[in-house]
Image (cartoon, rainbow, N blue to C red; front, side, top):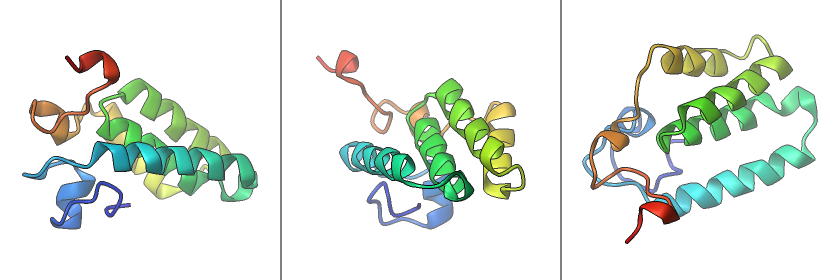
Length: 114
């Protein structure tokens, strides 16, 4: 998962979105589309890791509510999936992805662009 943003920094900095470099947002968007496609092709027994990663990507993008929805779906499919539970607790504690605290690194939608 730490490879998705395409940044050469320590994995723990990437996972918490606390890097000096901006992520490659187009690469992250592509990964999310690929994961959504994989989710449509997987069985419920194997869906939790995919849904958790999609949720995490939404957190990176500053979409906490949407991230929470995906994490809840992951926990519905596998209540014991710890990464989903820990990620959801992180969101519940109000932790914001570090990239979204700086204009240079924050995710921008088409509406944000001049």
